[in-house]
Amino acid sequence: MDQSEQALIERWRTGDAAAFAAIIEGHQRVIFGFLRARLAQVSDAEDMTQEVFLRFHMAQARFDSGSMIRPWLLGIARNLLREHVRSVHRRKEIAWTELCLDLESVLPLDAAGTDEALTHLPHCLDGLGPSARQAVELKYRSDQKLSEIGRHLHRSEGAVKLLVHRARQALRDCLDQKIKAASRI
Image (cartoon, rainbow, N blue to C red; front, side, top):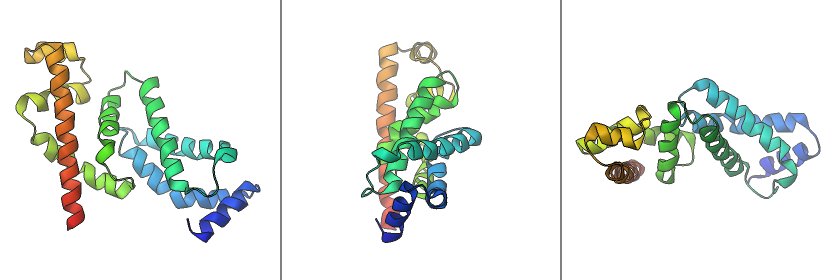
């Protein structure tokens, strides 16, 4: 962590509102980008970005001033996404958010890298076999239950569960390869 960020943290801890505003300004775009890439509605990403900074401020006593701010904020954002998934499970974009969280293990931490990586997702989806692609589309875009997908694909629910699991693995592998290839350029 650089000296200026450390000084901001110390000023913020003593109640300096301008220091907290500077912290927000320095990290807001990254946090918003992280959330926006994982949510269907811009307004949800905006609201959650504000909530991230509110929770960060409320957890001031638990924040280790020797730690970097951005990973702490991204952790809060991830927790908010998980809460969002649980609280509004019936909304369609939840399935997309769940897929993004599942693929997150290979996505870069910075918003620009994540946005670039997610541009490869349609190509990776196209690389799946027809049944796997259709199962993923039905699960994550149409938010259908595995039993419904099974009826549509003429497969058992267990077979669909395995098909979707393998498709997610293939998507993770494809994104990982695309990210590595892009970093070599």
